[in-house]
Each structure stands twice: as C-alpha cells, then as structure tokens.
Length: 88
Image 1 (cartoon, one colour):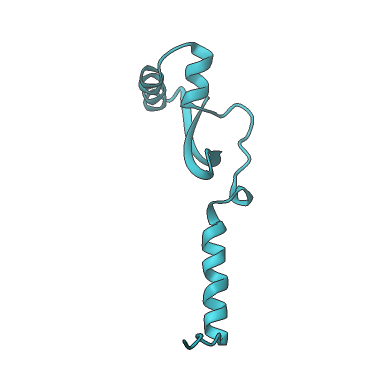
Image 2: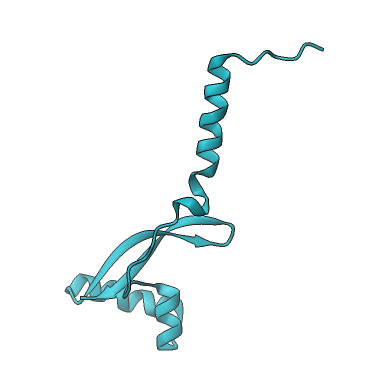
C-alpha cells in the first residue's frame, strides 16, 4: 500500500484541524466576573427548581432589574456557552 505523502498544504490543514479540535478546550474557558451566576447556581441558592428560577430571571431581565450575559464555562468534558445572570 502506498502511504500518502505529506506536503506543506496537508501539514497546514492538519495544524488547523488540531486548532479546531482544541477550540472547546479549557484554554478557551472564560473567567466569569464576580456576581454573575448560572441558572443552576441561582436555583441552588434560592432552593427552587431550574425552570422556576429561569422564569424569574427572564422576567427580571425584561423589567430591567437583572442583566444576562453568555460566558464560555467548563461543563462536563468541554466548554460551552452558558447564560449567566446578575442583579443590576
């Protein structure tokens, strides 16, 4: 069997593939500023269900009493965009 020869273009392509694969790694995790919490964190603090907490937070954003922002955080085996809320 013939082994494919690696040329300059294929090496660049392989490097790009490696870069894309690591895009979701811990290196790309964002630092969440103090005061910002996920729905799960608010739910645990308030001792409420996730769905009830989400409804309250969404209403608070609509009325202007809370801010919502997305940060990339580690969840399980990767980093994912996750909504966070904080009091204004």
